[in-house]
View 1 (tube, rainbow, N blue to C red):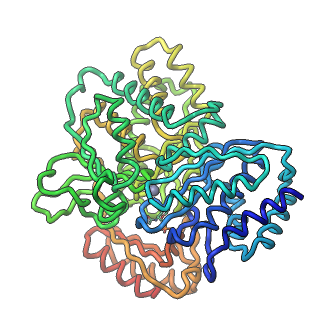
View 2: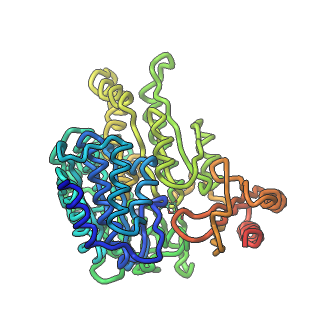
View 3: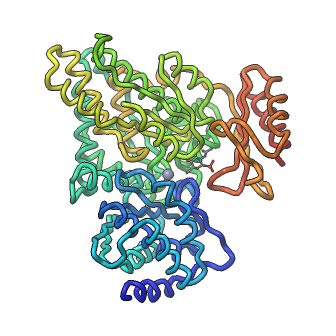
Length: 541
Ligand code: NG1
Ligand code: ZN
């Protein structure tokens, strides 16, 4: 058939790299950009099939390697609601990427299309939105994706150019869920800036005093140029943009991953910034952390991580809800908080004290996102700064109703604030830019300095190590990765070491993105956390 010959012909132009096994992993495919052309081409095909399978819904294809080095790249797929590709298709993504030749590729596609009942006769249309970060390799990889998409009859690609990962997910969601067929980056900027201004306008007069300027490290990535656009739309935002990529190298000693893992100030920051509120985005602007520089501290910082952003959001939402629902007989939205084992123990304790339900999932946003969807308002964050707030359709209807019918001004404003939060925060995926604006709005609302925020609770000292092992899959965990099941004996040894330290907690897990086993330990003092991590690292080595 025509479809067959098109696929055979185009895939012969994109031979896969020899001797390399690729895996979809926690965040799509990632590798050195030079070997990714065939993978991206094939993910173009997969995205087209996914659109056909979902009745022609718009599917996203993002080309990025996030916080990894500039010579790497990667590709991931966004489903109709803007969230990560359904896990149920990941094995197909793996086999597509690893098919050795055009004929086996074609066979895989034919078998899968049959099993999933995907019409491959050109009778249906498919639509894919493409985006890429600022990596130079993104240009030729986008071309490969287009060729993949175009080799499926009926499929069409729209190239959104250089965008942040969350912007692409947002546009996909807006086009499908909000039925804005032409949703673009401009709509994103409009919605985000309008809802931010709404939150600022709703600040009670008495707490209206300045909280000083913010400096943002943009990881030399795409976030810089986008934040500049937002800043122009928001004359209220007193932000200085640094590391926006004109000079430095993407993610090199800059960005949220570097700042959070190494707990040091990024390049371009120094003693002159002591006393100023600072934030860091990662290379594709889906992670956000804050920090301040310690005086005479050799570039050391006070880190305000994802757990603390989560705590600030949870506190604000809880406050607004308690204004709105003082009558206990009324409907009360169920609020839930989702963390991973990497969340600092002090944050979990704080959230519990707020009376919130805290749930743990394995590492990887797809797991947290899925869990958060079970609540009326679900808030999730990884310690590294990736997270968001999800509002159920039901809670949105309720808010919409309350903000227009509520008689009391206080309650009406609380409903309006929560409504604005739902519009500002990216419902598809963690978003550093919209997250940053929400943090800024809340700090302003509370009249809080970054230090006041950081004092919500004090992090327990912790240490993260990675151990290179021959086979990381030998380590099998359970219970949201907190318990080792295999190899036998390891968990008993970890427990025996951990109980020696006051407030000790420790776990190991195989990384989903690197060929290592990660060790995490925390305790009441830094020396103990370090010692515990080191001892446990020896156990898995
Ligand atoms: P792995 O390599 O599986 O630990 C890392 C991060 C995750 C997540 C993914 C995807 C840590 C400890 N792990 O996963 O939280 O962000 O990358 O980028 O930060
Ligand atoms: Zn990222």
